[in-house]
Length: 139
Image 1 (cartoon, rainbow, N blue to C red):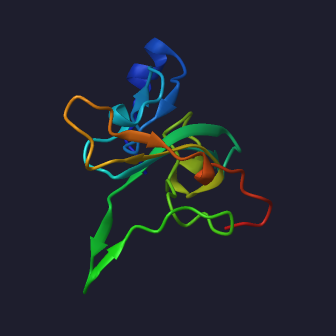
Image 2 (tube, one colour):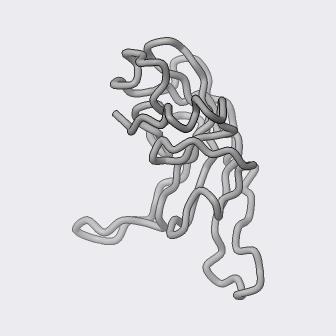
């Protein structure tokens, strides 16, 4: 379950999107606002299991992970929502769904950081090939 930010949302209303900590964001989505260290970031539409409310959230992933050996991050596919999954939805109205997982509905925007971009260049490149709606029954 994520932190409660009702003190903010009660004052400012519904946010544009929520970051991966469940923090409400009131600016347009931009990858550099959503993450500092991640190689990939997606703006994802999710749905609460409890009340079916939809949220726009950011999900970031590093270039890879070191387990027993280095493994690159698996990019999203239309066959599985396991990659770039959000987890519990943002806190909202004391809904029982705040303690449940969420449904991943679609990837609205997908961005990749170019590690070789110069200091004055924008390192983020949008990847429309990784933006799609998940069909019924995809988990």
